[in-house]
Image (cartoon, rainbow, N blue to C red; front, top):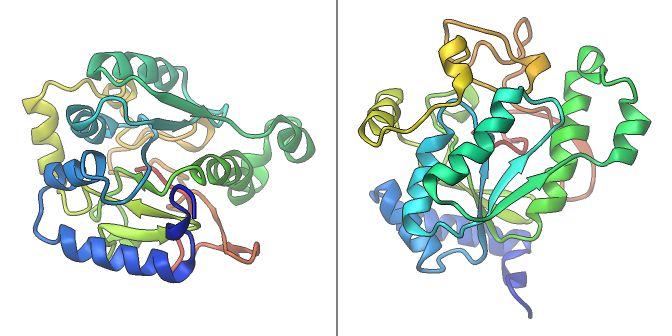
Length: 253
């Protein structure tokens, strides 16, 4: 059985997630990351980042443990220019050396979004084409991914575990129990540069067409809709299902 294949069955993934949740109970994010990046606790690991408002926190923690950790950035081709510039500047600032830039399939875009306005007609389908499919293709090369998701961010995330099963890999949320105050304190302590759009009134940042300025955390994403996650999840049998209480899309923060 070659690199990481023993992690791939549903039962083994569930067992690994349960074991890691037990092992991580009571640990700081720093100690979790040390076990993951230096102790091979979960096999091949990458960090997924949107380079959004608070992305520098997890990336700083990762850089301190292993700056060669692959950083997966999903370039939907709909990002703000400021975010794209921030990707390069933050990678350099933190000394991170491995950026994997993931983009949607040109053929798929031509077939489903030739004029670039799919987000106006069907935001879930747009997320599926521009986010979910390309990310699933990229992340299948890893046994586990790290995300900056936190329980305080949305109602759906309030019961989130440190370690979850997603597709054929583990999704690990080292900052799950961090509060907004902890995030802000860490940023101030380490003088971390935020995404420049934060200063322009964007507390949560995604694709430009689906992000607006807001005084309330996360309310600027998919405004005027009940959407709070990036759209569509693909089950193991290949069926596409809408996000529900026990399902979660590919999401970075």
